[in-house]
Length: 231
Picture 1 (cartoon, one colour):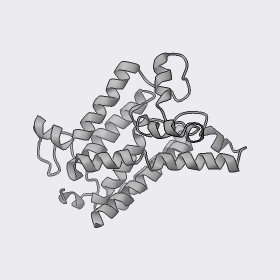
Picture 2 (cartoon, one colour):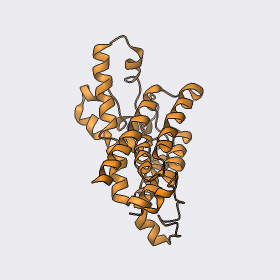
Picture 3 (cartoon, one colour):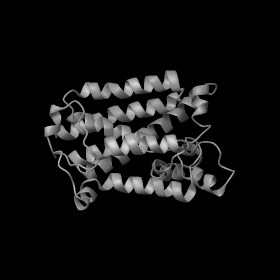
Picture 4 (cartoon, one colour):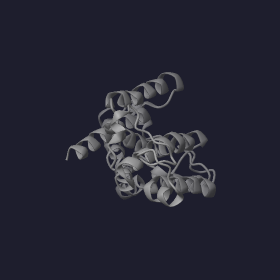
């Protein structure tokens, strides 16, 4: 682990460099940024083989149907708990459009995740990324399921069941939150997703459900990493 990053507000590194800003050869790159490389290869291979998934259209083609089967559906928590659990580990590899996969690939992996890998190592990064799907995702599954029972007429609760949820963004935000522990001013990094989601909600019309998951992942990632560093 490198500690020199703490003298900067944004502890990012270039994708082809290590934690000390040293250029990496191919072998070093593969060793130090294993998870980022693996994840990019998998998600783009899925797009090449199956095309983009859909959050609602699960019938037009077998490719859409297949990806819908492996996406995260809140309704599965009650209807099919085993599928609910299985899909926690598959939905992170599915994306529903170029804007979606480019957002995760460029901002998520090539900026945030590989920087975290350079500093903390591939194993820690992979665990943080994947843990978002066994913490944040199940939390909201329970939240919306119980919420609909308590408020059956709530459109906010109903909407969570009307589509599936997919992609690597909550993993990326959780890693971002963890990376903030290496910042000179962590609060600056942590406020950026808050502003980002506020803009998404007010100007771009993103679903509030997505923003809530992103923000929970960010602060949970910071909390987990802060606790681990203190230990």
